Image 1 (tube, rainbow, N blue to C red):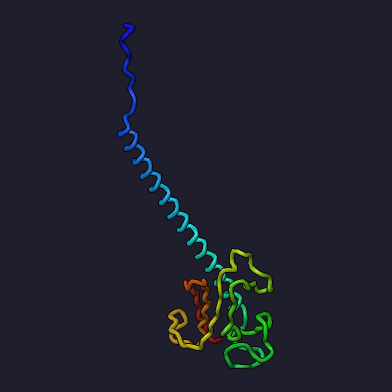
Image 2 (cartoon, one colour):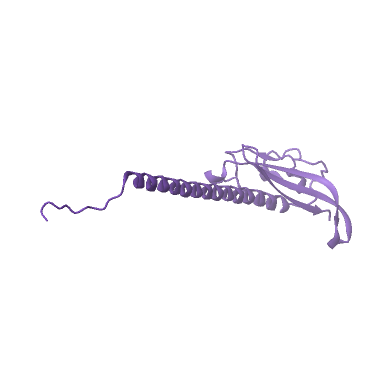
Length: 164
């Protein structure tokens, strides 16, 4: 018995290499899945921020009267309306732009940094739309707020404002 050695069971080099390869492939697959999930989450967050920026500006536009109190019928800011705070009708917002890094709310307070990577633009165009709930064709203003990223991706919200 003294000369007898017990044979110890161990993994061979081939088994270790195969296990390491399988573990490597599994790790790569998991990392790719997590990375793809994070990219989708970031994209959804950007879409939500862009939509929020568009909706809040559209609501600001729609809070103004349809007809200009000064009687001006030209689209775009009237004489003397040099800031957004001075706009007094829906059509005054036509051509309004905000650049990335300079986005502000209605009170001119800057949005948080997370929202500053977008541009915003407003168009207001006289048009005639068929509105079934109002009984047919109506003239009015089609307001569109477009939010864009520097890479060219855009989001647009629109609303038709019928003439009173």
